[in-house]
Length: 263
Image 1 (cartoon, rainbow, N blue to C red):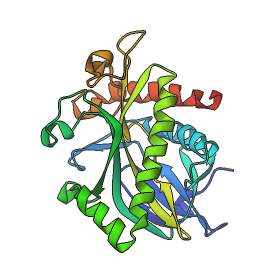
Image 2: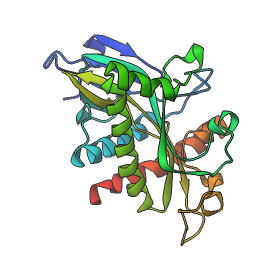
Image 3: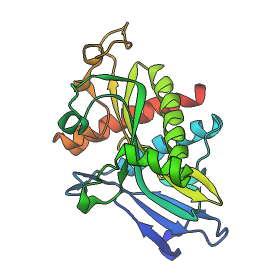
């Protein structure tokens, strides 16, 4: 039977999801996707009919794949369309953890790098999650200091998991001639363990298709090997494409992640 969400307590509501209590198991919650899409720290906001279903599919397939690959996540199962059953957090870590392989987006404005610069090894940055403050980045030197001097192992663990997840997904998307450019993930604490949480959908990363059949991705700059104009991610929305165009791109992502079951 469908879940009667109108009868369930709402624990929290964000820009793209609503979290509901699960009276049958207080150690879990329901995460229900919305058709909303936002950008610019929530300043730009629209509703795209069908987005919730597409995001749910992508999230289901990616988290299922990561679970099979041994990544510790909050994801358990999908009881019905647009809904994920996840473990309830003891504490949410109020950070966004960004890992980059290819320079794109905001780093071009503040990082003194050219678009398409390839980072090897990957670089990972921590951002304080606060829209009015525009998610400011934490100083990486200070992060290293508090890990060494104060035993703040959560930062080290999040950095390691982000790198692990990025590598897993980069290899998976490469099977379909798509480069994972960068990725933003979130974390929480369950018990005494740092766990990957929230969603992984078209708004979580940048994806650029390969520009040719045979690509050389070991160069210092890979912009000519990729096709930024054919991007499949939320940048299409940021750049002003219509809701229908954005949905089409997100559907292409879902078609790819549906095949992760074959990997």
